[in-house]
Image 1 (cartoon, rainbow, N blue to C red):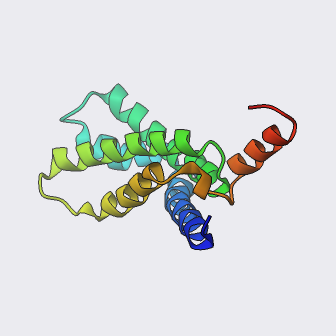
Image 2 (image 1 turned 180 degrees about the vertical axis):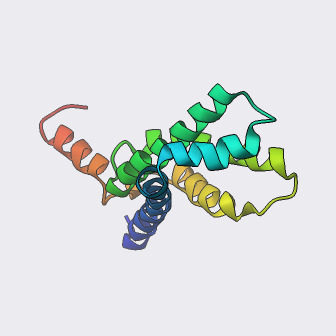
Length: 144
């Protein structure tokens, strides 16, 4: 296996993980999820969507970004994290599009490109991850 492929996947995974992690850190620790909900979700969408949905979405996206970013940086539960990130990107796309049909795609496009690339590239290229370490340990002791 080519080292460049391994480094490329590692870099993509870390970059995407850090983008989401730092966004989650900001929402969870700097602003506080309740403030994010009140100022960004409720304040923006209260006329368009039910309050329970807005609150659930604010909490879901904030904590998925934080914990998912951390897990992705470690390379733990990689595919499951990518699936939840895909759901966050779909939510963000819907939300921004609901307010402004022509909006700045920089909120989504770079993350989407990295996410889709990671989903399409073979898992075994992601050598520098906790998932691969655990997989190797399982095979060393005879589990499949």
